[in-house]
Amino acid sequence: MDIAIVGATGNVGRKTIEVLEKKNISIDNLYLLASSKSVGKKISYKKKEYEVSDLKTFDFSKVKISFFAAGGKISEMYAENAAQKCFVIDNSSKYRMNPDVPLVIPQVNSGALKDMKKNIVANPNCSTAQLVIALKPLHDLYEIKRVVVSTYQSVSGGGKNPMDEMIEQTKQVLDGHKVKSKNFTKQIAFNAIPHIDVFSDNGYTKEELKMVNETKKILDAKIDLTATCVRLPISVSHSESVNIQFEKPFSIESVRKALNEFEGCKVIDERSDGGYATPVEAEGKDETFISRIREDKTIKNGLNLWIVSDNLLRGAALNSVEIAEALIKNKFYGK
Image (cartoon, rainbow, N blue to C red; front, side):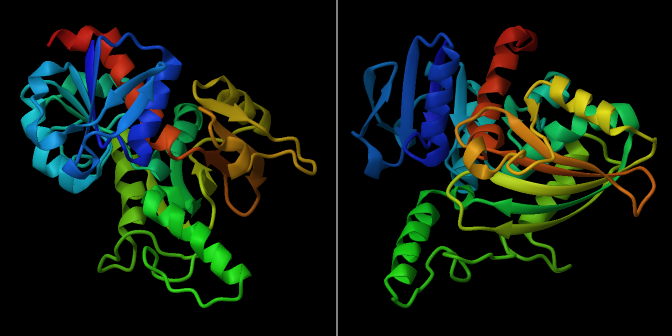
């Protein structure tokens, strides 16, 4: 198996390398690709140093799978050309809503991979991925009618520069210096910003609309969903407060059991001080953690959840590699 990683020097690219190493996928040749300014940099994989090559000059016929982890503009420029020569797993938003491209969380809808028409598979938005993997087993049992979600998202969702700026702003505030934001619309240190991505005409941000549209495409178009997405001064891991209304009655015990038994989910819900998951505990973990499971008495068949997951893993690198595993397992569906 020969594999390429586009955007290998970025947050998601490096995390993809870590996941590939952890899962011990058999790779004959690994090609690490980035812009010309990163050419020559070295990245370690299985105790061997690999030199970063120039994306512009790379021949994708050398590989079977390419992971694109460099943003929508790069995917727009290179993904379709690459897909003529190999399978592309794209982490950007470029192809997510394309009807010819499956949007996949393997535990939820791996069957969609059979419908590939462009040799491109889209990876969901990070906030969508952790939400839907928790919704899936509950939807199968009780049929979800409506979801209201508020997210509390880490700065790593915006990339390395926002992460660095959060640290710098924190130092500035503690030193009593004036803060000037570069990668955020307002000060992020010791603050909360109810704004991720650009605004649409209806007042929702693009991040919020991604959650709506992607959940419908992955899980069920009949589900009504509304979202408010907030950026917090947290390095890694996204949290979500989720209110669900089902068509059918449920019990808390059966909800816990369904979530705990579903691949990729783990329930931590002790109803005591510290008996719940936070972003710190989720960082570096593969699981999506579900806590604060309780009935919403204000609506019929209502449930509240707290969901936490490492956004660089479940929302990006881990899900991408699991897509690759599904393709390999099914022998690329005869292609």
